[in-house]
Structures are given as C-alpha cells and as structure tokens.
Image 1: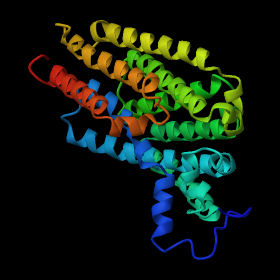
Image 2: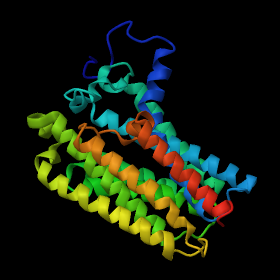
Image 3: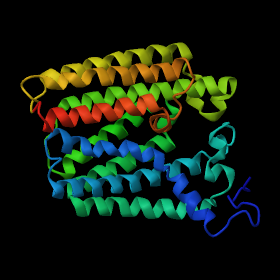
Length: 307
C-alpha cells in the first residue's frame, strides 16, 4: 500500500508497469460509453460518409482522453475509500501500482489537451468537452456526495457525449435521443448504486457517504421506474420521430431493447451484478448479443431494404 505521498514500496514498479497501470486507470472498458458520439451520425443517415465517419472517430478518441482524465482525478480523490471496497481496492492508484505524482501529471496533461483537440475538430465540440470535464470534476469533488443528484450528474455525462456527436458534425438531432439517453443512463446509475449497497452492506456509507441516504427499497423502485420509462420513450421514438422510415419499420428494433433491459434486470436482481455496466456489456454474451443485434437492426432499417 502506498504511503501518504502516494509512493509505493521500493521496487514495486517496472518501466512497463507504470504505463500499463496508467492506461488501466483511464479505464478503457468505460470508453464504450463514448460510442454515443456515433448516434447522431447513424440516425442522421451519415454513416456512409467516410469524411464524417473519420471526424466522429476523432471525436470518440477526444472523449476517451477527456473521460480518462476525470477517471484519474476520481481515483486520486477516492484512493483511501477505494481501499475499503472489495473490488475497487485493486485499482492501480488505490493498490499503489500507479504513483500518485504520475497520475496527477497525466490527469493535468489530458485535461489540457482534450479541449484543445476538441476545439480543433470544431469549436462547439471543444465547448462540449470542457462542459463534460467540468461536470465530471464537479461530480468527483462534490456532486457524488448528494443523493440522487449523483446519478443525475452521471446521466448528464451521457447526454453530453450524445450532444458532442451532433455538435462535432453540425447535425440536428432528435430530442428523443436525449430523452432515451437520460432515462437509460439513470436506470444504469441506480442499478450501480444498488449493487454497491448490496456488496458493501453495513460498510456502504464508509465507501460513499451518500449511500447511507439510499435504501435498497428506494433504489428498486427507481430502477423499475426508469426501466419502464426507457422502454416507453424508445417505443414512442420509433414511430413518432422525424427522419425515420414512414413504414414504422424502426419498431422492429423494440424487441431487442426489451430483451436487453430485461436481461439487465435479471443480472441486477438474480445475479446481484450491475456495479460495472461496461463490464457486463462486454462479459455477458446474451446482453452483448442483444446490443449487437439492435445495432444491426437499426442499420438495416435506416440504410437497408426497410428504408
């Protein structure tokens, strides 16, 4: 375990160990959330434009740099409490594999470079990147300690990702995408809080102060409410939004959304998972399959024989 200065025992680090630990601290698995930047490109029927696809890919990596920076800051702030968590204590900073001075320097560099890169792509996107970093830093320092507001702050990060994809390509985007993004991210956020409470039990408040204000019963109600609202809003989107096929073929994608949400509820309530949505997406094959099939169905409806 590192000392108060964040310096690990002598010899613990190797030349390759620190870069690997740094990348791990920037949480590449979490970068799947940044795929939201492609939503506007896809739903505005621009996916077959190579130039716009390249811009979206560049925006994706800028958001990965920005999100990696705030994950570093979050882990620096939470190093002590993370050591009380049965899973998070293995994170590079909490475990001492990544020296705190290195993590601080990398975080500052990424926080500076990400908005500059975003501005070069499009000034408005640079503003989105600044707003994203500001929001997540506010979450790390303050908002995460306030019950319910903490999950809304996480949801705001998802919305900014979706908005960034529209802004960087100067594409108008359906309000339904924002509504669906907010509701689905709230669903995932409340499920994450429930998992933390079930995993930590009596020690939950020591890891995160606001967990003392939650209850499993309240979170159960919020999870089911946001799940139902997500299904309803997406279903309404498929036959009321503009720029969709007039034959309402987009409704064919609803079953995949239903299955994905029902599968996630099973993982949360039966298998006591849900603490790491990005990990579940990559490790649970039925869930990953439903997302992949939904994506294929969307492309087929918008670009294929149903369009």
